[in-house]
Image (cartoon, rainbow, N blue to C red; front, side, top):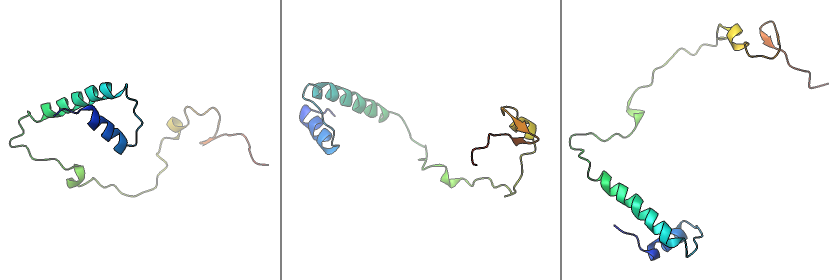
Length: 95
């Protein structure tokens, strides 16, 4: 399949993209190259391969909904510029 300049102008109009006349030949060449890659995909042998609709067919692993502090405050606060005990120390911003 090959796209002519009129088709490129029509695609641009449908996409509401302003394309100058000097860009039409370049865009036609690029779009034809993309369509060529898609035609190459049609040559791939996919006999016996089931279509994949997504990962929704697999059950997601569940975990207990428990609130924890992580259990490692020293690692969490290792990059804190200032700390007081197991908490970040920040300047007072409200009077």
